Amino acid sequence: MILETERLVLRDLHVSDKEALFEYRSDAETNEFQSWIPKTIDEVEAFILRNPKEFNQPETWYQLLITDRKTNDVIGDVGIHFIDSDNKQVEFGITLNKKHHHKGYASETLKSLIDLMFKDLNKHRITTSVDPANKSSIDLMNRIGFRKEAHFVESLYINGVWVDDLVFALLQKEWLNK
Image (cartoon, rainbow, N blue to C red):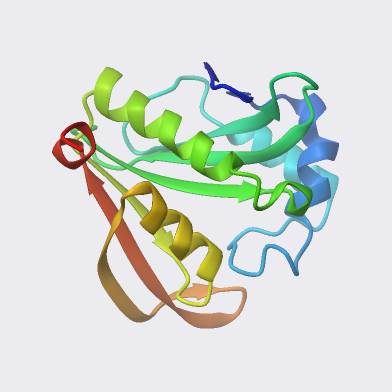
C-alpha cells in the first residue's frame, strides 16, 4: 500500500523501520495518550510483523508509515481499523514524532486517507478516539471536519488508569458534500 500527498508518502511498515518507529513510539511523555508505548526494539519488530499483509480487510488494524516525500525521513505512523464485517466503517489513529508536530502533517495524512476511504473504498463512516486532555488532537479533528459524537467517562483502561474517551466521527456524505 502506497499513498502519496503533496509532501508525504504513506507506505507499508518494514522491519527495517523498527529503529525509527521505536525512536518516537517509545517516548512516553510525548505519547502520554497512546495505549502502546514500546519498551524494546523487539516489541516494535513484533508490531510490524503483526501488521496484516492485505489492506482493507474487515476487522483488522492496518498500520502505515508516514514519511517525507523528498527525504524519506520517518514522520510518524497512522493506523486504520477496518471495524465491521460489512467493511463500511473505519477508525483512525495517528502518532507523529514530536519533531514533526504542528507542521500540518497529521492534517495532510488524514485528509488523504479520508479521500481514499470515502471516494475510492466507499466507506460510510470514519471515527477516531481522543483523550479529552489531548487538546491538539481535538483541535485537529475539529479542523478537518469531524464532529464530536460522544464523551464516555472512564471507559478505557490505558497504562493502568481509567480514562475518558471522546469519539469523533465523519460520514461519507458530510465529506463529499462540503
